Image (cartoon, rainbow, N blue to C red):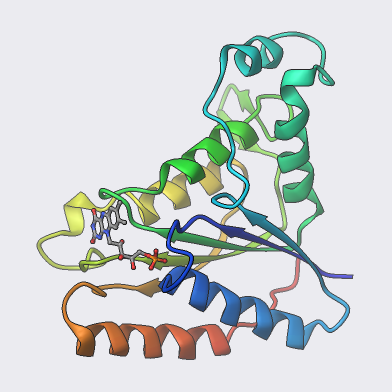
Length: 201
Ligand SMILES: Cc1cc2nc3c(=O)[nH]c(=O)nc-3n(C[C@H](O)[C@H](O)[C@H](O)COP(=O)(O)O)c2cc1C
């Protein structure tokens, strides 16, 4: 059975482009894998707290089942259980929404999702396929804003840190550059999402 983890992080619950295209991607993957189980992790509807003193204390204790780690353990279990991750992220202030960063802080756990070796970090999340669905008002994949981009580059670096390198990006860029540009970006992203296929693990 295929398990799809769908992570949502747009606070726009009405007209979000990342939510819209993420849904197209999940539907396409489900159509190809009719027995697929979908785990929905909506970081806006059920938010993840910031790193708290309780979480920090638990993380550096030797008790893996400490109360402060329950949510972190659950989020990590969802990652390990998944074959495909559809990760939706709008650009907020040149980077990712803080709710998504809070999720990052809960799933990066030494000894559980990665370890440091003499040759550098090693991620434990092998064999996962990730679809990154990225919305932004401006255009950052090329041109004068490229150096300001800390959304895709950050997520790619973090996912690689966890061992995930099979990453396809669907960008919905330039949605603030007028209705025509927004419609074209959305149409292109919809088409790309409609062509998604599951890769062999
Ligand atoms: C709080 C906030 C900050 C934003 N910061 C940026 C930004 O730095 N650069 C940019 O190009 N667009 C920025 N935008 C625009 C969003 O990236 C754009 O509207 C995108 O479509 C959001 O994805 P969504 O529709 O899935 O929510 C921002 C939007 C919000 C709400």
